[in-house]
Image 1 (cartoon, rainbow over the protein chains, first blue to last red):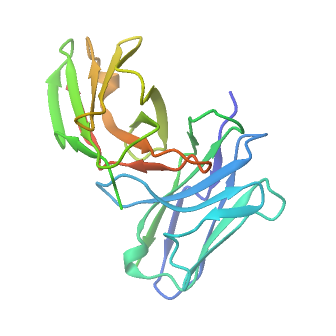
Image 2 (cartoon, rainbow over the protein chains, first blue to last red):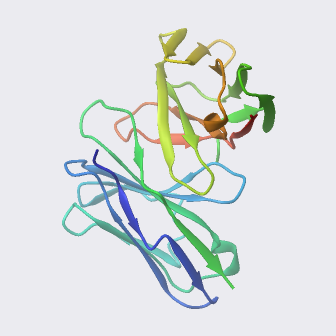
Length: 114
Length: 112
């Protein structure tokens, strides 16, 4: 069964450093989402792509976060510089085109900023 | 911001018992979905109920939706230790973005 791939699974970085996460959605899924999940909370949407275009980045802290999906397939989320408050799980999800509402999640990247 | 609020925050039961989790939300929705998250892992879609539906079943899962009260419940019957996980409701307010807003989740522990 096809799955959403994410790497790395775990990342420890010092504050003020740059960090990047990678996501490869299920083949053929045009919509890709990046979420941030703080421990004990539900996921919160950071950015949503439709193919290579950003359709919602209203909750993305644009002074330090950036996201791209250049060829409309895999995607990278970057944080520069990282802050202590960025420690969280970063989840990627994809959705099939059309009226399928279900989102498929990857295993996530656990970020710890020290 | 999170729209859904699950209740209770944590639930501990014995294997074989039923588990009921509730979700309340604030704005009108197109559909409501329930997801499961095992510790430290990604989320897995469980079931979706549309705004014009009142009840839906899938295996040991039963979901109800009351749009007048802006609430939903998830019932897991005959629980198993493997059901131990966090359960989240997520609302889709409609629109072309199919954006989901998640609640804070209920941590379910099923004791063998």
